[in-house]
Image (cartoon, rainbow, N blue to C red):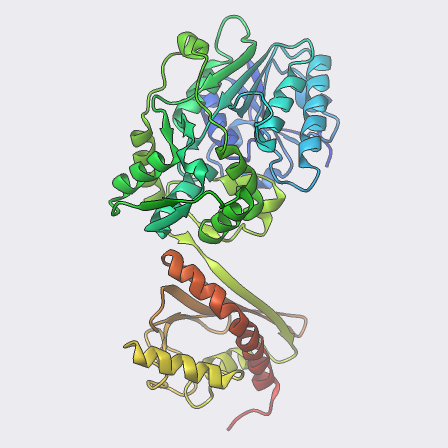
Length: 495
């Protein structure tokens, strides 16, 4: 991609032009509309402009296609202030060194273009030997940006609380999934969480001062709490019973990160540096920014209440998975922000049979036809379901060859039928969650492509353990199911 591909969607005025890096990320995606409302001309440096197509402010900004690894002259041209909001956390084994290289390229390009000030959002923590690699990298980026001639305001934040933030989602899932938690010692570490709205106030205020701010400024909310305190507050605001915490000394950050990866949408590769950072006390010791720009407006309880309300209503303007980072790519379909984690088993196949024949084979599943592979496993699961009070496999089918919305198919119910391209069955068996089995069909050039998806939304820890326990059986059942559908479609037409 060429960084000089400047996409102007509106005529320029005499207002101050601001460059925002990380505009497709969690903080940047919320800062851009704030700056537009404040009257700035906003230019966004993004790797993939299409990721901004759904943003309501897309036509009100300038877009430059590129990354920090490119030549940045075109991105910096005519810019007065530049925000550095990119973060390579967990993006490959060399991510810490890459962060320093990116910061260096950014600083050099900004100096060459005559940028008058830089604002950088980093992480709080004391610079000592106990500082986690994640926070040490954040501080090193700040030092690199400030090593040149441009005044740099480095705003260091602790835990950011907002709908869709990694910290909030980790907190939310841990509390909602686990009524009793075996916790490491870091749950007692003090921190000063801050609402995303207050972070945006400070970021916007940092370029509104008559003289450029320079130096390190710590930002935090009004409450100093432990992570255990945050869990308790969340449980109260969510209307949950009091969570019991059992602290143990031997739960290492590595083990903790894998546990977080299991029960939350935050992948273990991202959870590890976040958990490492929770060992460090992050409390504001310098009040200068509050004196310059004012006090934070939201308490921790208010921030949790607002984030929780917006999450429940599905009002998530940006989420931590929006960033172009490697850990999120395999998790892109997992978080469903209004309804929790979704786990999937996806299989695809192709056949020369017509799309109509394939759909007919899908429509005949269950009952006398069965499920093509692992029939004994299906029978065992049906027997267990019957013992638990579910329908089991005894219902069979009402129509042996056709699907109608609302029909039962063994322990499934037909939820969607759009012949011959789409069908969805919803599980009515007893489960610690909600499950669907669906097929997407498309045909071109005489080839029919079949995509089979088993979807599961777990409830609590048992739901996740159920999915993990069932995965070996999925590898026996689902590939054979798809092969059986294709074989049925390619076989002799039934009379």
